[in-house]
Length: 243
Image 1 (cartoon, rainbow, N blue to C red):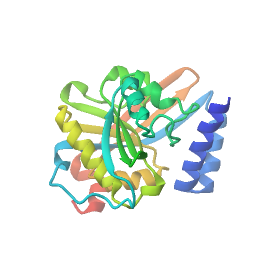
Image 2: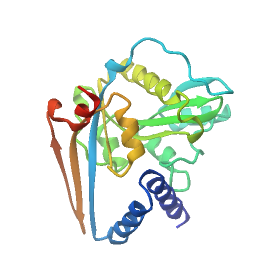
Image 3: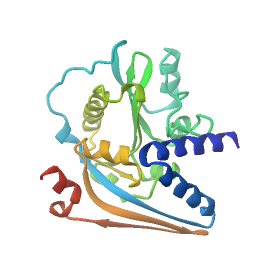
């Protein structure tokens, strides 16, 4: 029960900060009927990994401690990292819920954590989902990902509020792309609910392309997921960016 309350508190805080009190009230109403009915909409984004490599840029100014990028793909690797005093699985984020157990569980199920540290403090993280099995196991939205064609799903992106606006996100994204290019992933896809205005702003400032919408519907035990894709020249977010 405690971990459920922590999860809801984190979600409620994120909705309140991103979209205001009215959006939070609406989310509470939806949660109340969720056991029998659920309807969600998502914006779909894609990012071409090799376009983001570029030349080296100055390191972000974080004030103290050395900035570093590390990849964690197992709980054994996480054990070693934490034995060196790096903050990881015990770090409370919007995604590390269930009594701070989500990160350990995702590692067990095959997800890969791309982490940026300021000293030993977690400054940014994003999870790479490399297979359909892992996508299903972590109960991610059932987006259509062509894993056989060098695509992957990204979930759980988070930047420590302490380091937002410092350049950490840019460093983190560039380091993530170099890693993904090195393991043969050409494209990552993700989805965001429209109420997550902060997430949408970050997505559109990170060379992501919004390529469609999805609707997820649940009535009792019946579930449906429908994606609607648009052509590049018809994407509203690209028109806003002047492409």
